[in-house]
Length: 187
Image (cartoon, rainbow, N blue to C red):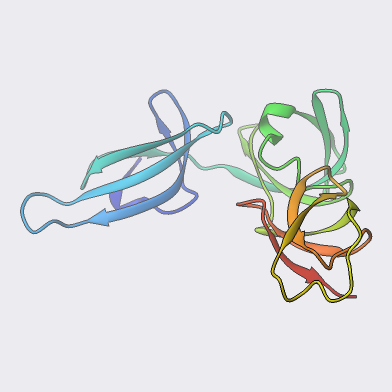
């Protein structure tokens, strides 16, 4: 059991009968009245985002989750198969749990899976990933000055807008939070 002073990003707490992760928070101390904490909470595993304001000093039930490094093996229908890198134990995770990350991971990538007791409840991936362009219109020499973009399909199936000069086979860095192109990766 904690209080609003313990609220921080990525804290998981029990709220309204479910598990919720703090995405953003702001401690507000108005000139008049009591302080409060304004939060944005994300439902685990549903993904629904709500805003809620807690009074300062209000009790919250924070949950301790066990985080394990796992390796993504393959996707089979509605299940994603992953393996614990320390025990080599394999488990299958429902597609609903992987909904926000499935377009950014490829086979053999390392992901962090959060467990409550022995049940997987959330999946975390790095803020940026490097993926290869598999399909896009050909780039033309000199198309760097206009700042135009074109759609490109990446190896995971994700479609992002990239600069005109990029071609199939080029590697790009993508932000996993927004799904946007960040930069070209030269090897």
